[in-house]
Image (cartoon, rainbow, N blue to C red; front, side):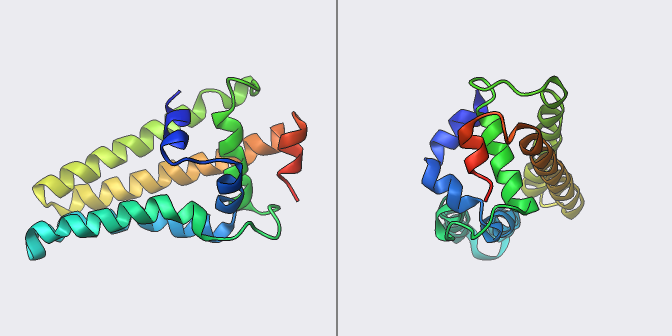
Length: 167
């Protein structure tokens, strides 16, 4: 599955997931797309040096889940969203309820469509598709995260591991 490939790309082991469950990690990671937008748009002002800013944003995306300590508690919305993402990625091993199987894919598709708008807006340097795509991407992502909170609530007692993530 694509989710597993992305997790593997980010080398998200149990310790990294635990640190990413810190709300500071969750909310500061939302800065990646705006940073990328500014970095790509800045090619107008700084030319090829904008690649450096793109690299900084991508490094931030990779470092972010590792930067913050494991949270004192995971009993909050942001942490539960991350725990739900772990459940979602593991759905081939531990099946999830039927009502959780399709809608997250739709939300990811919405976020992806937003990302395509952002890319197009950046290529043609047009504010409106870039802004519209950014909003669509954020709406899709945060709605997905909210669904992950619900998924984790439904699945937290499915395995001893899942149960241990909430403290």
